[in-house]
Amino acid sequence: EVQLVQSGGGLVQAGGSLRLTCAASGFTFDDYAIGWFRQAPGQDREGISCISSSDGTAYYTDSVKGRFTISSDNAKNTMYLQMNSLKPEDTAVYYCGATDMKRLAGYGVTIPTILQELVVHYWGQGTQVSVSS
Picture 1 (cartoon, rainbow, N blue to C red):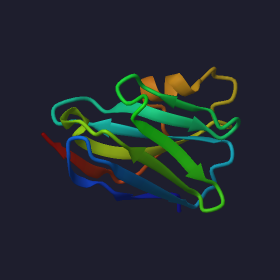
Picture 2 (cartoon, rainbow, N blue to C red):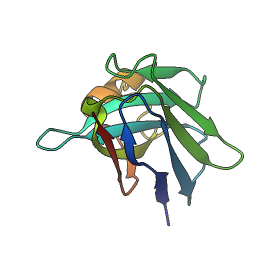
Picture 3 (cartoon, rainbow, N blue to C red):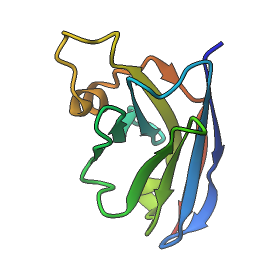
Picture 4 (spheres, rainbow, N blue to C red):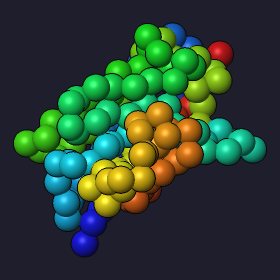
């Protein structure tokens, strides 16, 4: 059974830091793009960061660039999101996601597409991040 199990998150003051963890089981990160998404109250879910297993290139949306860092430990089948300099507008439920790039071969799906159009095959359960001002 494929699962993504998240941990981390919580309440932090503005300017603080948190780290989210996403542990995968039932598949490996090989040939997957793995990323982080978030959904603020009353808003649509958005992609914020993604890393390609093929070349390790990390992508970030402008809203988190320079503050958040995505990483993975393929030996542990675990990915992370280090969030620094948090702002109240970062308050949201955060989700990890994995996209099977082999399944999408030939369809021209890129990492930016994954973030913009939420092309995700497996989702984590979500974890709340709240940033107070």
